Image 1 (tube, protein in one colour):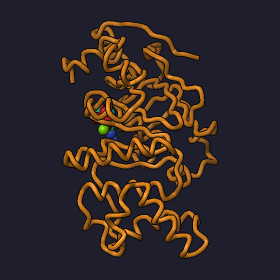
Image 2: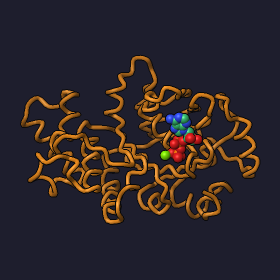
Image 3: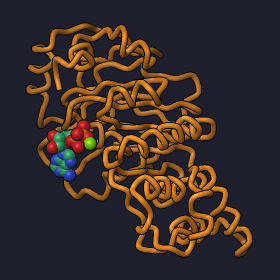
Image 4: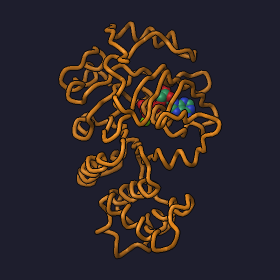
Length: 289
Ligand SMILES: Nc1ncnc2c1ncn2[C@@H]1O[C@H](COP(=O)(O)OP(=O)(O)O)[C@@H](O)[C@H]1O
Ligand SMILES: [Mg+2]
């Protein structure tokens, strides 16, 4: 089912957003574009998040697909990180956060009482803006997850997982002779790839990235962008970025958020060349945000 378009003026959306803030009911507002995919890994329906009285996202419907990068863009504070955190229940760690709606992974409700949250966060991994390696060696950073999840029968298997994960993260050649060095001794870009290797090590289906290049220089950023494109072959990837150029370079679909609403979603080239909603157009042409 495609959730079809409606065009509304910016002021009407702003008015509606103001009127709706503080409430938690789904609204009648609809996202422009097709929020569905034929074979979704994750499906979000009528997702609302509030922090105490403050409504952060409203009635978000979106699918995340296999072998695809979906970019989440929009002005600061519009709910991109909040939405991303819903997908692996990281909002659970924020005491004031209340999440409603339905989010499924392979058809299973991830907010079901029986869902093991630690397992979920292995299947739906997250990479953050600031690289955050554990205060452990390069090897242990990657081995930690497989060990606690019991993914390796012995040391040889664990070594294999560590090597494969570092290879997939494009870091192996740079660190294979310094596996015992602290992860924090690596450069910023290497630390971020170490965090990606750590995520990959527990065999996720989905990798979420919240502005993963914001703390990196242009060369390290280019390296991560290339990596994201390679990782797409094996994972579903959701990336929040404040860089429209980055969204255009790495993603196949783009979702534009505005004041807690998912305003428009579509193929990235369409969003950037021929957006259907005025708010999207204002943002991508630099008139807003
Ligand atoms: N932990 C929190 N407690 C209260 N409000 C929050 C919290 N995190 C985010 N918010 C609010 O929710 C809204 C969306 O924030 P966020 O998801 O971080 O936006 P973005 O990632 O697009 O910048 C903002 O108004 C922000 O101030
Ligand atoms: Mg954010």
